[in-house]
Image 1 (tube, helix red, strand yellow):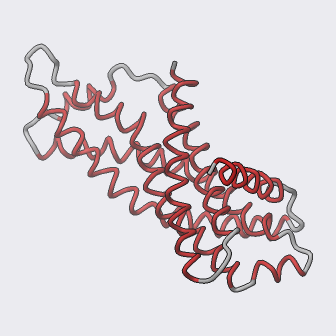
Image 2: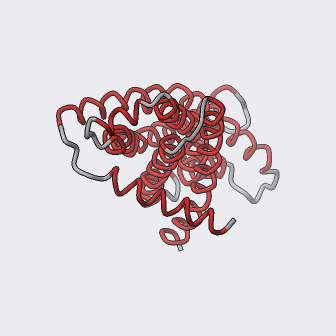
Length: 248
């Protein structure tokens, strides 16, 4: 078990050493990055928007419902909603969601290319297939994911605002006062730093499982499942590590 794990780590490192090399044709590389912006980033904006707004509203409602002591000010609803969305939800939870959407897509795409021998064809032509296929995905998602995280933060707070607008659980003025209270800009930087690591983990781990598929269509499905599971585990692990380093 341990030997198999170490072998996988070594294979992953060797693959990344092939990935992070200068592309042979920069114009084609830029074109691929722009394409991946659309496939991995902008196509994920819809699900991010929907989940963020509803989760912001739910967090605000649950917080307002839980505050039953007159000693706790009502603006705490806005403060807790903002802190929850900014510090954890928009980065970690969104990363876990996109590990399923983006990770399975990458693993399925590369796995299909492997079993149909398209990757071998690139290697035969003297092209660094790892660099050609994987690097644009990593670069594109690492660049676009912080933008998606910022959108998620904004929409999550908006969701709480809409909750205060349509219910009488907390007033809009009190909610917005709580959102603005005790705000530290480093909270945003902390989340964006985490998003860079998580974006790299999702794309690189998923690419590894898709690129190294052996077999047929069944193995491609298994590789997609492994990519999602392993990416999620690494996100949770690095979330703990980065929180320990950045906040404590």
